[in-house]
Length: 85
Image (tube, rainbow, N blue to C red; front, side, top):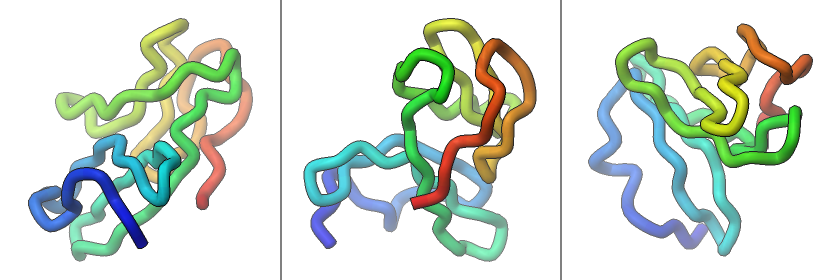
């Protein structure tokens, strides 16, 4: 699996957008060090979500849809979760 950047320096209970095999992926590393891969595309209008470290969630910069660490919908104009990859 080819990734841009490294997941080795990703701390537990944090997330970031990485590129895996040429595609953007929202990656979250849980408290146990397990990696969860999500689609980074907001289901509302297709913007790429960003990791929001203060609240430990994913936030869409376009219309502020919010998703929890595991990609579950919290609020905003989006009405569905970020799918797991």
